[in-house]
Length: 223
Ligand SMILES: Nc1nc2c(ncn2[C@@H]2O[C@H](COP(=O)(O)OP(=O)(O)OP(=O)(O)O)[C@@H](O)[C@H]2O)c(=O)[nH]1
Ligand SMILES: [Mg+2]
Image 1: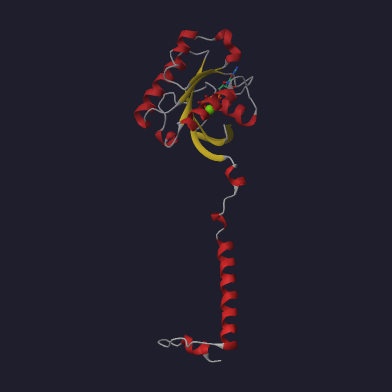
Image 2: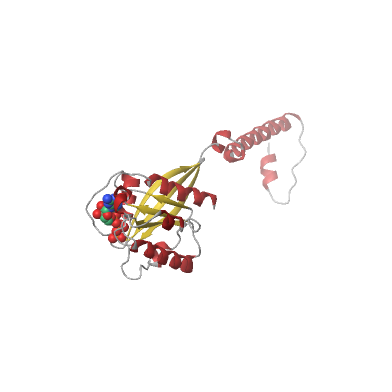
């Protein structure tokens, strides 16, 4: 049978076939088509609906920063949250330290990239390189030191100016030393309108720590 050769030559039309030759060619063509169909079906599995996949949780990643005056307990809060540990020693942070932890918000897994920024003595200024790209922040004050509330107010102004108004949770830390606190309820209430939430915490006992991070994560998912 010379049909195969003839049909491959340009300009030549495939001659009409009849009898056994035609049957053979039809059989080959049908097998070829079947194979192709099987292959093309196998090569596009994403086209089929898989209900199990639709139930997988959505994973989101968010950068958050911990901001506040030196010594308020930013690093201690992160350590408590990420590693469930606390240390009485004060080792000031140099620059920034990044940690991460996942939290659940509804059906969503939110991975928090936590930028623990050193508290600056001078003008409480926050280096913009550390907060760039942040979705929100924990603003930390120390209940035993009223001056750390002034620092917090300055930091809000600076963040608003540099990045626009971002959601933040105001955290008043060192609750285990509440007898020595220099702030009253009125002072705490003054922060409520601006912040997502005001949370009192102790990195030492762990009280309020999960809540502070969780409230921020919820606000970021809603945003
Ligand atoms: N009693 C008590 N002490 C705390 C608490 N949180 C932090 N501290 C102590 O306060 C000191 C400063 O804590 P850090 O976490 O290093 O403070 P920071 O805000 O990271 O300070 P910088 O890195 O210098 O900006 C340390 O001696 C901690 O042990 C707390 O909730 N209760
Ligand atoms: Mg620190």
